[in-house]
Image 1: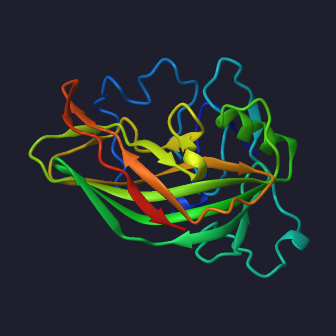
Image 2: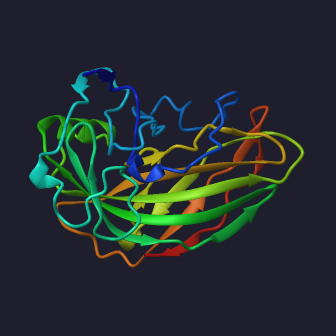
Length: 251
């Protein structure tokens, strides 16, 4: 049995297995999610088998990471012990008691460029998260800046790689926004968890990463597509890469 402080962030990282290339935070932009005093949460998805942990807020608590599903919960078709969900219908459990079920998955392999950066969207997933414990609900609500959360809740995960084709290292601000139906947007201030925000990408290098956000509570969303826009990138606190245009992704 062990504990982790809720300041650790996980963002719906169950599907993040295989992600590599995350860089250390050696440089931060003036506009990055990490540096913004208006934000109460930050996500870095350190645990591949968890849905969320609570934010680094002033009322931090600790939750036990000791949930073990019952035998009856793992006997159904589609259970994946490793947490590496690949097909719709597959499910697993995290360590605080969240059942994560893959609802949709697409692999668009779509790219968009801005300045010296190229962004490649590799995977888009919709996840159904069912909290089996009170701790799971508390941690999800804190991580998503909510007083409480209804279970099940649905999250969207976008896996992408940022290629730095330039001769200088840049600090990316990650995703500026994800636009859902009805012009609703997810961003750093509104239930978007972005593991790339604030990361430095060395010259002639790349960063494989992802972001996740809350898209619905209780009811499965009827999303057929979303739009994504990447923020700018910085060097020596100056913007050297402009934000991208909107890029449409099918679900």
